[in-house]
Image 1 (cartoon, one colour):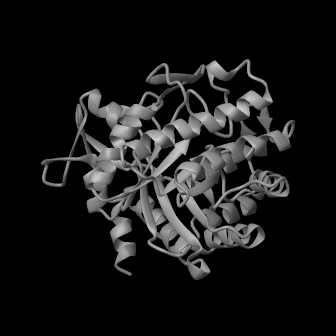
Image 2 (spheres, rainbow, N blue to C red; image 1 turned 180 degrees about the horizontal axis):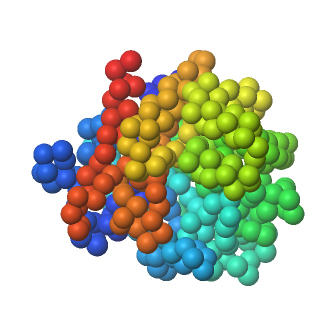
Image 3 (cartoon, rainbow, N blue to C red; image 1 turned 180 degrees about the vertical axis):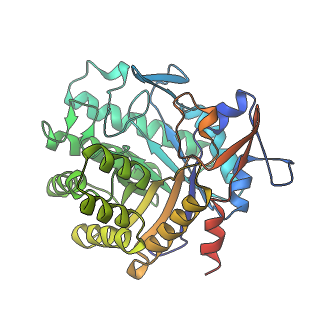
Length: 352
């Protein structure tokens, strides 16, 4: 499994931002391609998400949160993937199996699938995955990795695939996606994606159920967002001593290595950080976070730590309706963005 380490970026918002009129400039103020700019800072891979039947470009997630989705249907993702491959970068596809974002809070069944029984839903997962992957093969674009599900700690396509009410059916859904990928691209590596690498209670129940019931995967991927971890610490009102320990763990390369090593040993699968991000107003701190975290993943023995992906570095909170604060760019004009130094952590790691 050891090979080229993935220094990745998720760029799912790029094409929508471009259509809205946004552009990116380099340090000299000259216009630059947002994907190429990432490559110049050391990125060698791009992650792109896929929705089933995307009906809108913005989504009202709840009463107070309106999200920009990006252009994430298979045809527009194919177009973005062509740009990625033209730059010689590796590609990860991330299937959400929903019509919008799927995460630990929301795993909605696609609208067109809502009335299907378990068997039909299993077929839907297989057919949708296969259709997308065949489209990419037809266009001679081969992904290196495919995620079957996004942050699925508590399952996918609720309630049909919820971990605690349908644990075996959940594994059937995931294995259908795995089989579809392998049928078209046998060498492609399939990733199973957990949120909160630092929270065993969020990850172990899923993984125990998955492997006990014959779940098929090649890699376990995790999200790692110290920013949100610390927000949770504050919300839970821990004691001062506990807060200090938790905060120190978020800043520790050894802590991340320890969590990843524990999962790798227990389940016998290599691991990745497929989402990471830090405060866009703390450029130096986020750069150091990215560098420490890449080093932590690379430190796993025998090349069992495969890579790290920054989630949406091309944005600043100022351009997003929900003011998402973990991009790695600054707004320098009304429709102009410029990357901060954060991704230069990749070049620094490459030179070690």
